[in-house]
Image (cartoon, rainbow, N blue to C red; front, top):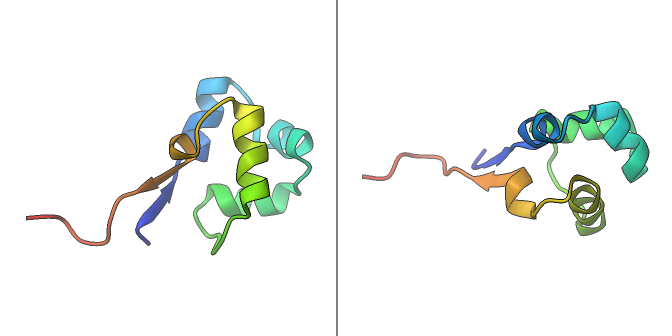
Length: 72
């Protein structure tokens, strides 16, 4: 997939656990884990908004486009 999820890096920078973030955002730990591992197919804007609010970051800190193929 061309979108990479950097949630684990942001959590590490904020010294916050996935469990704590799940409680703050109001999302199940299982669903947040699916997002963190990059297995999610979609993210609601309301979820992204809540993540950015609690992590005090921008969406680009969490999601990064890396492309499928190297550029020449």
